[in-house]
Length: 117
Image (cartoon, rainbow, N blue to C red):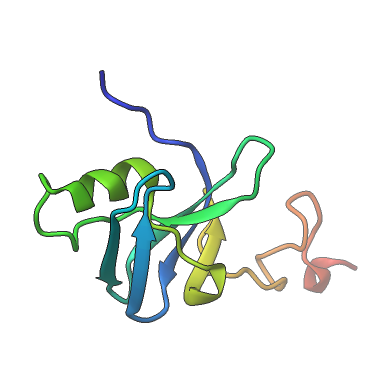
């Protein structure tokens, strides 16, 4: 049976290369890894729990059959929000912000201030 990914509400990328230690809660085995700068992360909204940022793009892990990859894929590599940049809600762009002005109304049903008479 294939597992279903948890839905995410936000996306971001790591601002710089990060040295991270992560482990599965019930396990004594831990991993020390380096997450490259610019790695895609997602914010998971836990059902009633604390929202958590985890690495989404695991392409930097070379051995896709390793326990490291398995645990990263199934349990997640947690990343602190302060280490992220370009944070955006799903369906929105982090790099583009619309400023009110001609041709770009403040509200979709309002006219631009420069067009009002």
